[in-house]
Amino acid sequence: MDGFELKRSVVATFERIHQFNTDQRLESLEVLWHGETAGIRWEGRNAKLFLPAIDERKSFPRSMLFKLVGFVIHELGHLWFTNTEVWDKAVEVKGKSQLLHRLINGLEDPRIELEVINSHRAANARTLLESLTQSMLAKNPAYIEADDIENYPFLLAIEGRRLNGYSIPVPNIVSQSPDAEALTVALNDAHHATSTAEIVEIAERLHDAIKKRKKKPKGKKKKEGKPENKSEDQPGDSEEQDEQGEKGEPTDSDDGSDGDKKKPIDVEPGDHIEEDMEEFKYKNKQGCDNRSSVGKPVVYDFYFD
Image (tube, rainbow, N blue to C red; front, side):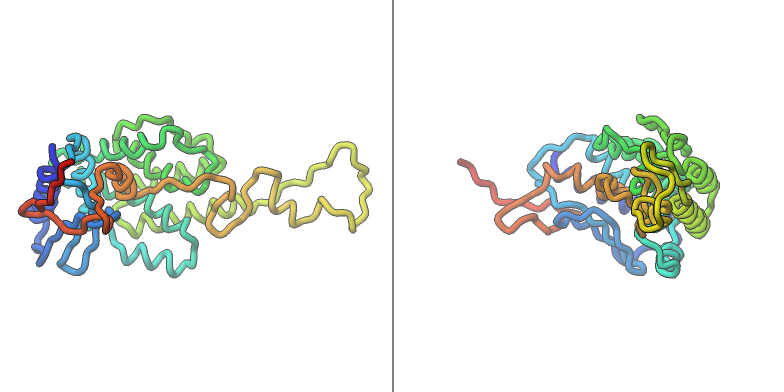
C-alpha cells in the first residue's frame, strides 16, 4: 500500500473507533504526521495524534498499517481507562525517581489493553495489540537480563501481556530475577487491578521492595590469605562497603540503575513505532514534512533525473 492509503486508513480508524465509543464527542480530532514524534495528546475535548512524517510516495508493508492501528488502539485505551492525574500525583508526591514512573507504565499498559479487549470497543483488538507487542520484541531479540532493574518496567509490560493471553515469543525470566517474588506479586495483582490508582499502589510496593532488597547489608566475608587481626585503620572491610554488597551487586542509586547496564528498552509502543518508520520518513532540505494528510493526500513535486 502507498503512503496515501496508509494515512487515510489510520485516520479513519482513529476517528471511527473513538467516536463510536464515547458518550461525548470530541470538539476536534487531528492526526498530525509531524516530525519525529509518535504519541497522543488530549486537551479537554480536543485530541491530537502525532505520528512521524512519512514519504507518501513509498510503498508500505501491510504489517505497518497493523502496527499503527494497534498503536492507535493502545493510545485510545489510555484515554478511556488511564487516570493520568493519579499517576502524575503519585510520582510527584512520593518524590521518587523515573523508575517508579516507568514501573507504573509497565504495569498500566497491559491493564488498559485488557480493558480495551474486554470492552469490545475495537474490532480485532487482541490480535492487533498482540502483533504490536511482538513487533516490539522483534527489535530486541537478545531481550533483557533477569537482574536488569532498569528494564523491569519492560519486563512487566511483556509479562503482563502474557497474562492477558498474548503469544509472547520470549521465555519468562521473572523467576530468575533477584526480585522474583516481588515481581510475581506485582504482576498478579496488576492483572486483577481495575484502576490506575490500584496500579500506582502496586508499583509503589514493588518500588519499595526493590529498594529494600538492594539496601540489605551483606555479611562480611573473610578474605583468604589475609591476617584475621586487622587494625581499625586498615581499609577494605568498612560498614559502607558491606552495605554496597559484593562486587556485581547493584548499589542503592536513586533511579534503580546498576550503572553498567545498557539503555533501558522503551515501554510505550509509540517509541518503537518511531523506530519502525525511520526508513519511511519524508525528508527534504528543511528536514521532515510537517504537513498532515487527513482527508485529501498531500501532493509533492516530483523530480526526475
